[in-house]
Length: 418
Image 1 (cartoon, rainbow, N blue to C red):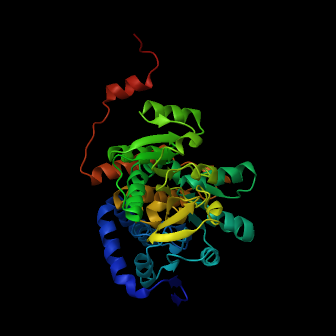
Image 2: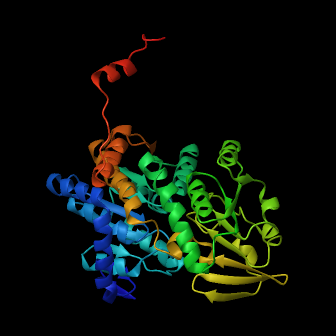
Image 3: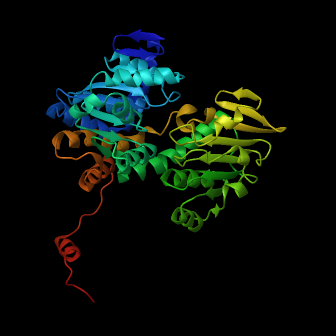
């Protein structure tokens, strides 16, 4: 472990490889680079500290660079014990970023790293999963009055934030970046769909084609996973608790049933619900010999890992453990943690470009509206979300039509009928 006054990372010698990976991500995240170039001229974050709890990946490094170009002092900790890319963390440390995290950190270290970020007294928080926000509210309430606002990256975090609002606990505005169309309809759908299967395959080395693939949850992430699995030849079953999402899955051509019925049919199970114990021991006891389980939700609570502690376990491959349940073997990827980051590298840079463009512009929005936003969950204006889409289309060299004056007038009028 390499430690300094402004960092705690695995090994600074990994920095050169980290710089190369960041360079590749930078080429694929043109819209964040454009935002960074504007920020470097306008300096919207001069004198502002931004505290971050995000996955320490090459894509996150591009966001960090954009915010620092805008004048921000950035401190960042990992938001998951198994998702840090150690070479990227080392590269950020050498760039002078206050960075804390390594792959395999303990729970105690995880929260100590969050505390390190909070000790910088951030005026803006950026979260993936809401641990930074809740840590501030529970342990450092005295700092809340000096916080302009925050941003939340993922569905799990938004669920927690709404729970805080319902309980009257959230004391500053947090932008629901996850709810941007350019985030949850791109990152969650296209990103999670691809990266989940990437992590599953890296961990298990199994063939997808011909397998019965059970997707637990049919939100944006579940839709993406189901689509990619079917595209690779899987027979997909969906389980749901939401009537409309279940109906969508049926109309999209998937079989829908209860988990208790799917348990004995599936070869591969993927959880993407954001909820706890959606696969329990009662389900695992019904599974086929050789069934594979993986989670792509933010926290390691979706598969009931605690119930497996009483069974014999062997590590068969990196990120791939075998459990013997009454003589039948089941396999769990990445210890039940989010498989796309624990066993792979997370979403491709291209899809993270729109997500992190949203984070960067959300921070700017908070600064511009300082004192005007009440405590609660805040949506970015639709115009900003639309600007992100345009930036990405421009980066891809795609032009689209514009409404004519006649069309604008027609759409804005209520008088014209049959």
